[in-house]
Length: 70
Image (tube, rainbow, N blue to C red):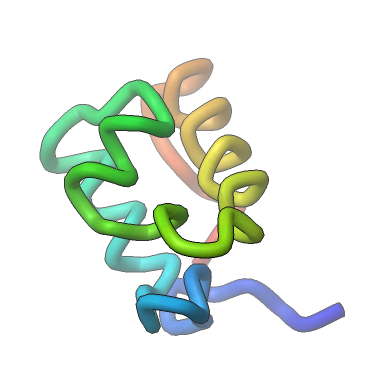
């Protein structure tokens, strides 16, 4: 398993980094998977990154921040 950082690729289909998704979640106060997919295009092709997106959203929705990815 690889270390997840802000510069790591989250969505390989669209070449979207964790940091890009985290930034969108925080700046636009995104709350749902659908909002993240619409805003970033992550998760719309093969769906394999949806679990990671959901994990980020769950952390943000519970705590108001995302600290699991640096």
